[in-house]
Length: 163
Image 1 (tube, rainbow, N blue to C red):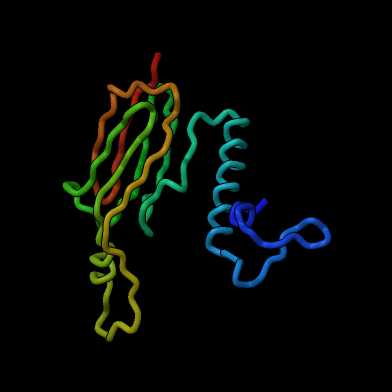
Image 2 (cartoon, helix red, strand yellow):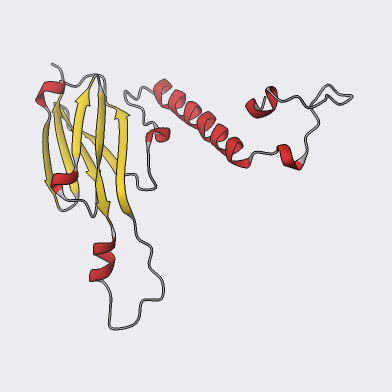
């Protein structure tokens, strides 16, 4: 049932359903609800397949969201986070209660400007601003062993598994 219509005071039609008008339609709300339902479906599917971590796509706070890769090396995990256009000093990472939190600032225009030829730029899309992302880590990590490195726009975090 649509959350937005459940609290509405619209009259019911002969089938017991609410009459909707175009003015009642909330496409953004419906899309957010659909995203939430898809996240729940995917998270439950991954957990049924034995995945020990779950991404929370609703936990991003900007139009830039770092790309994440988690590699299982047997005795440890290596997490690579792509943060192009970010200075090392602007990035903060924290591991707490099985969650990884990363935040920082990025300026993706510097890469675009270096690729400019001798012509006039007729279109350029740029992102300036801050980002925040968090996600669950595998349950068998030893949080106290985390080692972080930054090189060429990639944050690499190595975390040992609990033995």
